[in-house]
Image (cartoon, rainbow, N blue to C red; front, side, top):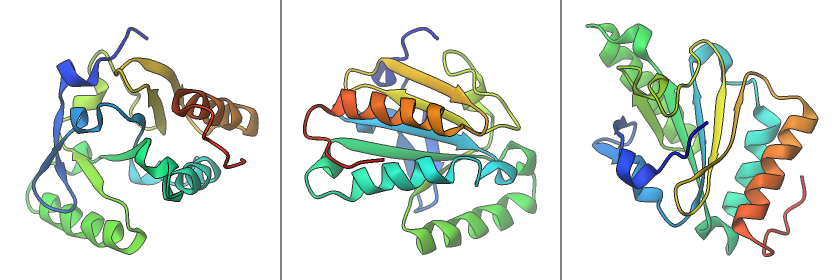
Length: 162
């Protein structure tokens, strides 16, 4: 995967909390992007839990952004769009995570080239370079690889174990 500079790419997506968010807002932090449809939300639950533990750490939380993006392209028509928007916003409030809506399939375009119908994970360093990209339900060794890349990008302060 070519370098993915989130500051120049600057994709803007609708947010479950209202308004719009840009990927470049996370510049200077390590970013883990999850892009998936509703059928694949549970594919990488253990990885999400491990990353949440890092993100909830008082010191490390400032170093890491977890960006959840829903592939909602299949519902980009009235009245489904409003129903999906409301349902995802309710879920986001319940779990305490902002979810972005990818109505147009923006994340399937280069340089991301995410795969529809799969869970997609992308680790981006502080400078906007893609460190690791994975597709599908990750086995434990693949999840460790993602966590190792995140820890390495954050630096020696990452003390949360997997």
